[in-house]
Amino acid sequence: MSEAKAGKEDWERQEEALIDEERREALKKLGKYAAYTAPIMLALLLPKKCLADSPCRIEPCGG
View: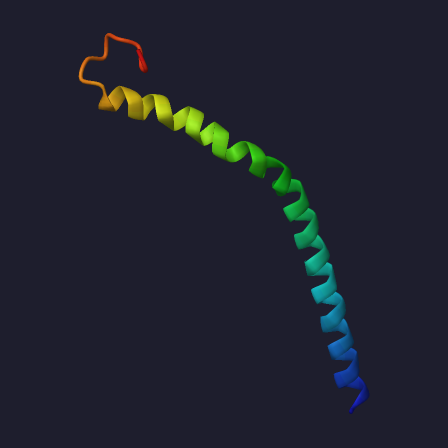
């Protein structure tokens, strides 16, 4: 194996390791918000759906 080819492969491995580390850090940060996403989306979307389903919009939803 030539020295240039070995150097290129070593550089590629280092680059992949850096990308993997950056990806892990990003997923770690974004993973904290995953627990909040579904309940917030439900809170935002349910009142609109409930109002759209009700025949009379004077009564409060669920009443």
